[in-house]
Image 1 (tube, rainbow, N blue to C red):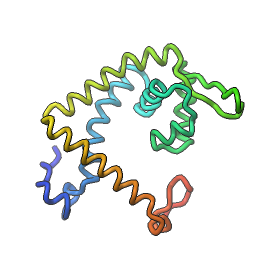
Image 2: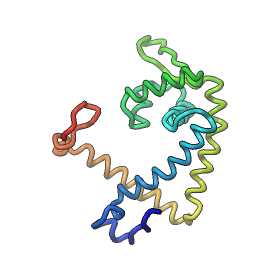
Image 3: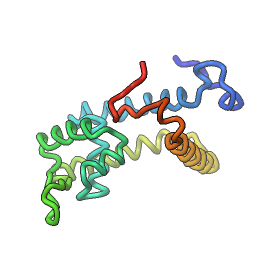
Image 4: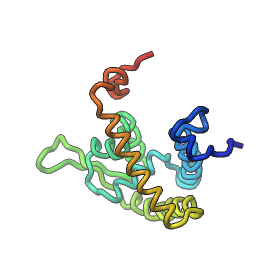
Amino acid sequence: MSPLPPPSSTLIQPEHPPELLLYRLAKLSAASSRVVTHLCERRYGITRREWGMLMWLAHEPGIQPSVLAERLELDRARVSRALNSLQKKGLIARTHNTSNRREALLHLTQPGMVLHDELWPQIRAINVQLMNDLSTNDVQALDHALQSLQQQAQAMERRPDDSALYPSRREGSRHV
């Protein structure tokens, strides 16, 4: 069993691993993701990553693979492999843009839409269950905090002085 979360004041000045914000977010994400992964893989035969793609394709039909990669914050190679798997399973179709034949557009097939429509309420229910213990004020505060943290993380990511120290894995280089 994981140690109890530290008092909120230690989030600002962490001294131990369980006090780190990113550690706590990773633990939350891992635990909740296992529930979704179990549902997707065992009941529906798709990966959690494939579910993410189906979800976006249901909400943005005709999206390009590069845009999908951005939405999911995945590199294009991973997206391509997952899309190939989804296409082999008959869940997505690729079409070409009529004005630019080199541009692929992604759509759910009928079986893909049926799968999405069956799985979406279950994923929403997991989300609702996860939030059940929070009051309305807690949910609003959490939403605000997550927006602020996302903006701060994106600002940190864009800092030009940090890019040399922390090159993108997508560029193929890492410091060892």
